[in-house]
Each structure stands twice: as structure tokens, then as C-alpha cells.
Amino acid sequence: MWKDRIKITKIDSNFISKNYPAIAQFDCRDDAINGIFKKHIKQIHSVSYAFIDSVSGKIISFVSLCSSAIQRQKDDSLHSLPAIELKLFGVDKNYQHEVMTYENKQVKFSEFTFMWVLAFINNVLKEYIGVEYLILFSVPQNNTLKFYEKMGMSYLTDDERVYNSDFSDGCVPMYLEL
Image 1 (cartoon, rainbow, N blue to C red):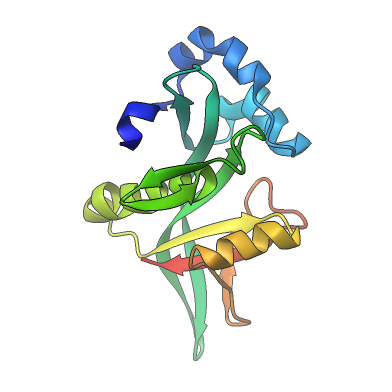
Image 2: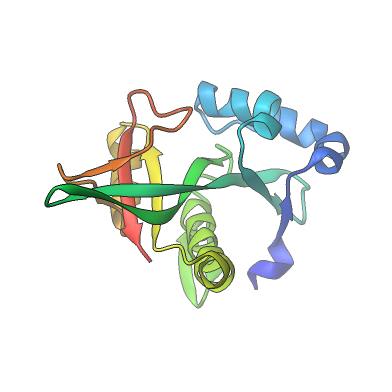
């Protein structure tokens, strides 16, 4: 069972001070994401969670979530639709291709982390804040875009916009209706 293998914890000052060696060792093969995770995670106006290997104590992955909206042009007006932004998402290179069992399926840790985000939004956040969409800004690498497509994400249309995130330069906005 995944709960025997992975501990999920909110990243706060206490977590950072107790887990600094594990944070320093984390490497998702993206220098920008690594830098933000290691040095600036508390300053990005989001709530972050770490997925920790219960056996080794290493950080498998992390996510950062914040509120946002999709702006949709309809006729002569602009409508804002409530969304949660997956602001940052990184999986350590040592776990990127490793497979685990989740809900009787073999999934990669990246897929597990993403499915946890969806479950957290649908089972916790959606009920309290009425969120309708998950949005993110994907790095433009083909394998990353394909991953998000596989996970059900779609590209914004010409009539849709998302407020640009702090880290969105050169990234591709995507969404998923919840």
C-alpha cells in the first residue's frame, strides 16, 4: 500500500529546518525548479507538500498549490472561473521512472503525485472553495507536455487566459475541468 511507502507532509519552516539535508539532495533535473524548491519555497505565495520515501527519508516529489482563475471571453464580457494552480511540481530524478502500486494499478511516482493533487482538490478544496479547474504552466519540453496530456490536461483556447504565474515565462498554460 502506498501509505506504507510515502509520507505526505506540508512544507513549512519546521519541515525545512528538520529536512534540510533531504531538500539539498533533491534534484528534478530542472535547475529553476530545484532552485525555487531549495531556496525560495516559502516565498512563492502557495502551499507546498513534500512526498517522502518512508524507507530512505528522501524527498520523492513536491507540489505547490495556490488559488487562481481562468478568464474566459464570452460575447462582450470576461468571466473568471475559479481554479487551483499547480504552481510547482517536481519529482526527484531517482524516482522519475520508478513504479509503484496505487489503486491496483502500476503508476510512476509522477503520476501518483499528480493523482494525489487531483484527489486533494476534489475531496478537500473543491467542497470548501468551489474550485472548478486545475491550471498549470508546463515547461515546454515535449515529454512534460505529453505527461500532462496523459493526465487529462488540455490547452487553453484563444478565448481563455490565465493570470501569468511568477514562473510562467516560456511555459504553456494548461487546464483540467474538475
